[in-house]
Image (cartoon, rainbow, N blue to C red; front, side, top):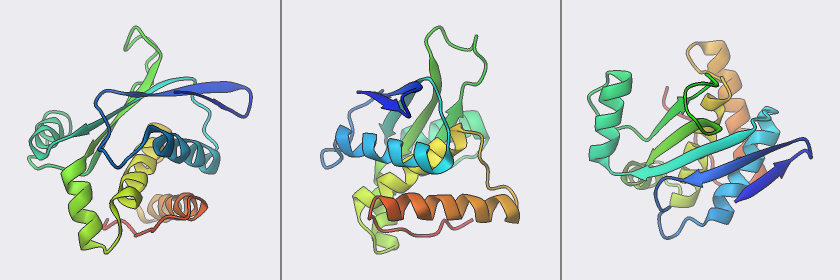
Length: 159
């Protein structure tokens, strides 16, 4: 799916795995565009998106973040132009089963949880962070605005 944003750049959301049955590529593209607009980020290239199992999430989290547990979303930013031969600006990995569990836990729905995790991952790819109270508040405000623009359920992240 090739998306043109603000007529000056293009970003392509590519799928490393098939999205869950209830999550369409059109929906994911809509989340991507809403997020890019809210955070005013204009990447040019591909963003790879993968949906993985708990086991795969745990393995990646341990390998790349030294955390021995499965997590809901991981982001890998490829800001080094020579890192990959293609124009991949980054990868986002979402654990579908954790997303389902969190949707139940926070009394939300699966589509809203996937949108939140995708937006969260894109924000990290753009360089945004939530490591301290100032950046955390800014991150939460942007996520809330994205979810409201999509008319989806929003929950705060349990930092």
